Length: 381
Image 1: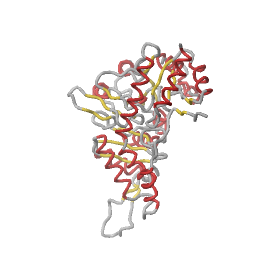
Image 2: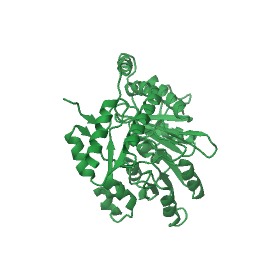
Image 3: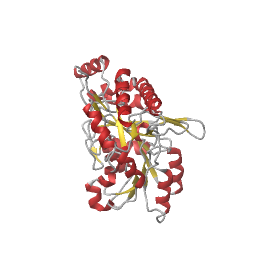
Image 4: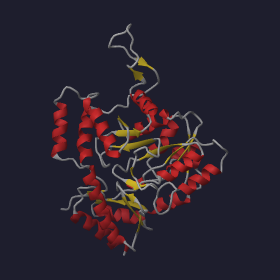
């Protein structure tokens, strides 16, 4: 009997297991040296100055919003085709979420639609933008930076799908997703179906020392031990801000270190899988386009079909557990209830009506992929 094929799966090998066991046998399970090692390794990987490990990417987005000073009533733009956390983080700080539509070919937040939205409002109406490297495809963050500079906005790059992805900028320099060279902050996820699996976990990246220090404080209850005087001992600490317990453990960090070390190989395998899908579906199905000078990290491989629900069910009958990414955030009951039911986001809604994510992970075998391809083609032809 053929085993089921999920849309995503973590890649845990014996080295990962041995490393975690070694950590369990060490003196530190949390707040130990491996957190800092993971942060340093990640900074080197994406080529940024500072990385802050956190309990999950949602926590990372929340801390990023706070570190950039979002206050109740502040307006921030993001995409409706993303996981809800990209928008919810704005609400956590009392801000207003504004959605701009996607590009119908890349499925990314449209630079043109974002510009139209910004320029339809008075000066200083918006505070920032949260573009998403959806499915692993790098956003044109250089273009968004030009727009943000023009209107005095900050940028948080949601790179949760894209560790290992990159684009070539106008200076012909390689820019890794989330390296914070054009954005103020990058955020990554270490959920099991992502490239780097820590069970749960996330990373925030920045090149701004003030933002970095703020993130460190907010991650740990707003507490600092930096302001000690001769009147106090080594026990002394001060709570400077209302922060949170959003720390990552040494156990998770040890797994993150070994997972990160093999991500380059994993992303190459994901691109090999994507190439095979594209060759099989060319001129038969629509899939995410790849603009020039971008390298897709391929968290997902999304196709679009007119009879999506029927294909979804047909694949499940054959043990292929495809998934839908994503239900547009503005159509969620929570967002409809607070006034988004009439949002004009036609590209996003049309995309959702047809999208289907096929299996995409480094341990997907050639035989399994060929089976997936054959079943998709059997259905659509």
